Amino acid sequence: MDSGYYAAFSGLLARSQALDIAAGNLANAGTAGYRAERDYFRSAIVGPEALASQLNTTVNDFGVLGGSRLDLGEGALTPTGNPLDLAIEGDGFFAVQTKQGVRYTRDGQFERAQDGTLTTQAGEPVLDARKQPIRVPAGEMVIGSDGAVSVNGALAGKIALFGFAAGAALSAEGANRYAAAAGAQPAAASGTIRQGAIESSNQDVIGGSLQLVLMQRQAEMMQKAVSIFSNDFDRTASEDLPRVQ
Image 1 (cartoon, one colour):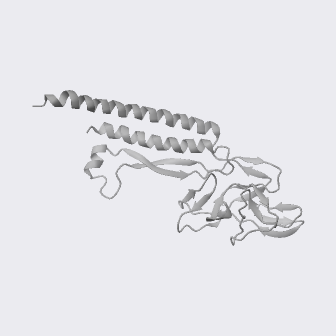
Image 2 (cartoon, one colour; image 1 turned 45 degrees about the vertical axis):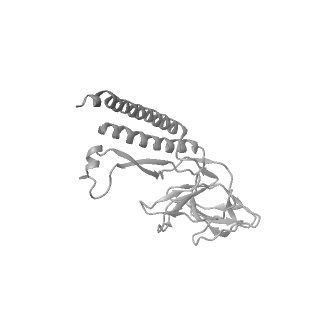
Image 3 (tube, rainbow, N blue to C red; image 1 turned 120 degrees about the vertical axis):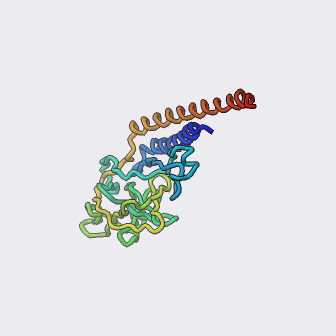
């Protein structure tokens, strides 16, 4: 079979998957603390014998989508004036206790529960450096850049920021919750906390829209190429092969 068909087919597969990623990014352009996903590619054939394999020679090392990685670039900070809204400047994630275990987020739209526990809007406790809930008494609350929580001038607790070594995987769970990869150990992050602000998604609407249109057009081109090669094969089978004696 002509290797051009493999090229067109692998291109269509990769662009279709990248289209899904672009659509997800655009859909979450308005989600606080959202980290966009970026696609990356790998060879169609992998392994120690990949370069010498007959199949790899046939498909000419065509690339396929290897997966997606989180873009950890910062989003824009938007002042809100709400003392329970927190944004992170620089590296790090808030840790929250969910039913599935500890998860990490950049969404700092917090609330104070009836018992004083600092929680997410979903009621998940925000954690300190020991991964314990933080309880805040009633009163005027001030949160320092280091996460120290003071109420009426008295220290009530400290919000921790957690970071991960370069290359440590975080997998998305929902729009802006992330789980650490197995064996990945978070460390203290170098970022600072800004009270009275939230961080927007790091995917802007204009860039996301352009990326989505680009992926759509590329997918359509690959689909057309697959159709052309397929028609060529059909013609060869119906017209040329019967002439072979």
